[in-house]
Length: 84
Image 1 (cartoon, rainbow, N blue to C red):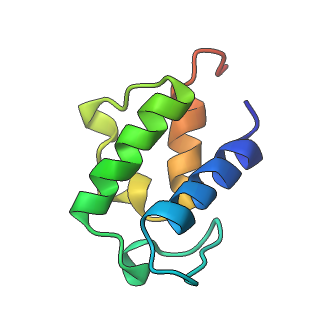
Image 2 (tube, one colour):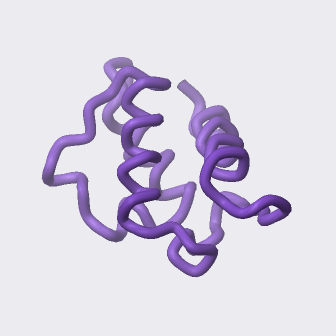
């Protein structure tokens, strides 16, 4: 799956379900700086696992992989079955 599709899906979820109304992010926004905390991160992980059918292993649960939507999307694409 194209990383841009993954970015768009995660971005939409975060803006609609986690951030305060009117707060917008892009692929490079530092998520911690816009209010994403550990509870929100768990919600994002559950969304990713349901939406993309991947399970994020413990070794991927590091701060760098959750810093931006781009980093999240890269992790998701890497975990997808058709990733080369």
